[in-house]
Figure: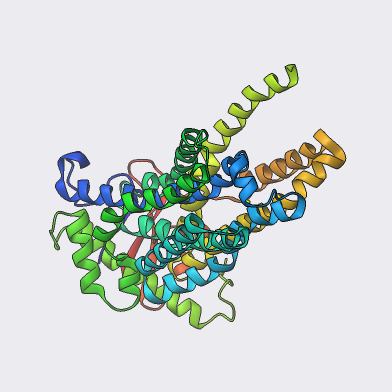
Length: 413
């Protein structure tokens, strides 16, 4: 019998070396890999922010033949169209071929899009290149957070997965400074240089990505348990395959994936489981307050929470669904916001406030707390102990002696 307490999933895994992570070479390497993967979010933040800077350049406007109205909105929105079209494809590839191949595809689209933009001789080529850049963002946005979530040390997973979206504003900030530095260049290089720089952040992350292992959870799901065991041992336990940190995780992952496969065989739908002057000066501090609240919660949890709550077989598609809903909203807002603000001015913000209040109510009453559970044990939060029992695996309710709260134990029967 193997026990894996839910509370140990993040705070104090059995068999873990008590030494600080920065004094353990294998964890230094693993966390370097994770930080490198976070840079793919920074790359998306750079790409998604660049249009705001280019619009201020006379050289870019002249090159693009002074776009206005709907056409200008289309140039901006086509990036999000590339995102939305390819998130479902990226999700399928992540499930079928692994987490890493999707990032390679993202690099391919990014290189093509950046080259097209940097050498564009017409506004049409530039616009089409924006579609390629947006497509790259879909591959990075789906595959990288999944890989982070599934290779991180159990004790660090919640922080590591939350870091991914924190990379986005970093990329946007870098973009702003690059655009600012190029503002005085008296030629098309004033906008071509920021465009070329789109490739820099992913190149900085490339060495760490090449060092990254494939997701052990994906490997186990396709029957490559030995490889998965080796990866967990090397990256989390210093090469000790017999460490409880390794054996508990491998058995737990195997058993939960078995549960999911058996459940999938008995359901008709992949989403059927049992069980989003003065007035100007006044705005500035409120912007800081807004983004302070936004970045405390919505930014870090945007990808980390979906990765936690979706079971393995649906995790990639669940994250894709999250991204697609966001992309649709961004694509919609790109066109609607200017029209609505012109029609009803500040009253349009009331709509946003109502949406936020509805979100607050939904989160408060329906979003479960996932702190203290491993990825495999979060199913008990939704379905209860009985909801994840099968003929071969049983989840047993126990008491956490540290916190006095109900947790799950994985038993083989």
